Image (cartoon, rainbow, N blue to C red; front, side):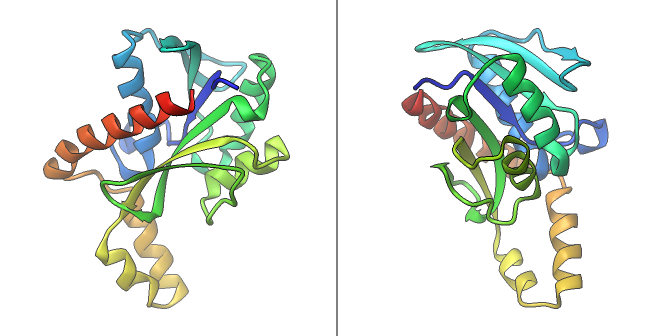
Length: 188
């Protein structure tokens, strides 16, 4: 079953542009550019920016939910219903703190791993049977943070995911997005 809808997880405000938590939006921009689709339009009813594009095996809708990460499910259910797709035809692109930076992983029918955006989508769609392209963000500093108190760990993680990529990491992202795109084509 081909992917018909790709939802990127991120935060809509300009201040979050190019932050680690917005790697889902960044990957969508990469996909749109690869398919010469740059006419993003904000759909108020769906509370998302959308663009249609062609991938190898057909057309797909790319969507950036404007709900903020933790409420992505609100837009996901509207998008699913509006475009009349099954959950198995949805791919969500997310940041993942359990996968090392420079790595990507595709999963289907898996738990959220604590990602609030994914939890929100699972709750809204009432299923976990959708694809995910997980883009790794894990760094050694995260391992140290996990050994601290819950409060200090949570503060570190929040600061980390809302920080911008360094110039060298931005260069690395080009390779990561290329790898992620190739994995997406294999699912589709």
